[in-house]
Image (cartoon, rainbow over all chains, first blue to last red; front, top):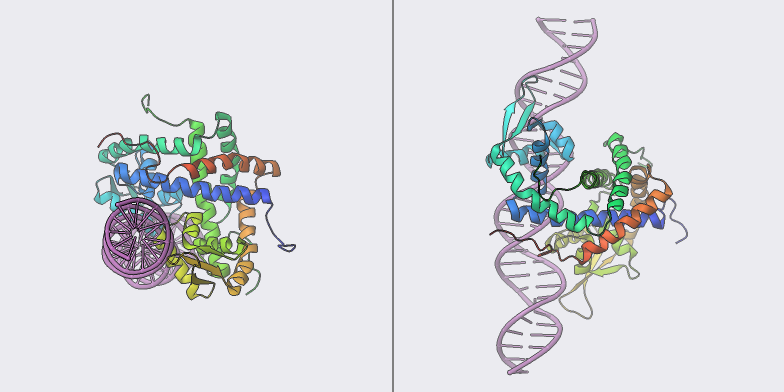
Length: 165
Length: 165
DNA sequence: GAGCGCTCCTTCGAATTCGAAGCAGTAGGA
DNA sequence: TCCTACTGCTTCGAATTCGAAGGAGCGCTC
């Protein structure tokens, strides 16, 4: 194939494919563990974890959506489920009337604590098992700039694509 | 917090979170590009790419599902869409009557070729932009063993979990 | 203090996803 | 040959996802 203009290096290709497959497999494994342990989807777990991490135990909807890389409507749906399950509470924000503040409840914290160990176990066993301490450090240092770069790249008209049409 | 028994190192945590966020952002960006360029979902693109890579241009359903880390029913649905769009063809396998062989059509190859450059561009721009050649090499070498490890770990009763209940 | 654009959230409908159940076809042993 | 277990795929229903549209509040300018 002597003509694939903007092709990727074999090395890049390998890294890209590995990345996709690793995260896909990890995602599936984690999802299953969470479902068994606490009947939570990965998104729900992420939301609870994020709330639990916050000093106040709460976040605005928008911040949650951004943090989890999720659509607003999807977030509304999931928070609705969590609220129905008594794991979080919704309240109007004090300073901004249109904003909704989501707060984790005691039940939410309890469930989170119950589920976390298993989650960590799966991640450790799958992702970190074959890596040394230094490897993990290296990985973190490689991904950090990538993450920052992606964050700063506008999601919409992101790439200066456009070619024909 | 002096008691989170099986917690992750801060370093591990950082690597894990970065991994999740990076792939999530990448996925969204790629998905959008594919939709604009050729009205393909990421899964459909993966399927076409996999078929296009094959020497024969075809694969059995099961192999496709495994390769893409996908449920069988979901695969049936997506292949159905691709077939309806004239991008692939389904035919009974020669040797095994229950098996279905999926083959990419000329139209499929054409579309794949039309979409690939943009895809590569997005991945390059987002994932590889902030990384040097050596960095990418290192990343690939870190992920390879992880991928192999995950592949070998059974998806179902994967981890020797089980604790209470 | 009215107008105008913007942000925040929700509702709606359509598309995609999965697991469970069902339908052949295959393989191995009695 | 017949039985039984298993594999490969599809159908079904329920749950999740997104984007577009809608309603309400905020902030700036005039």
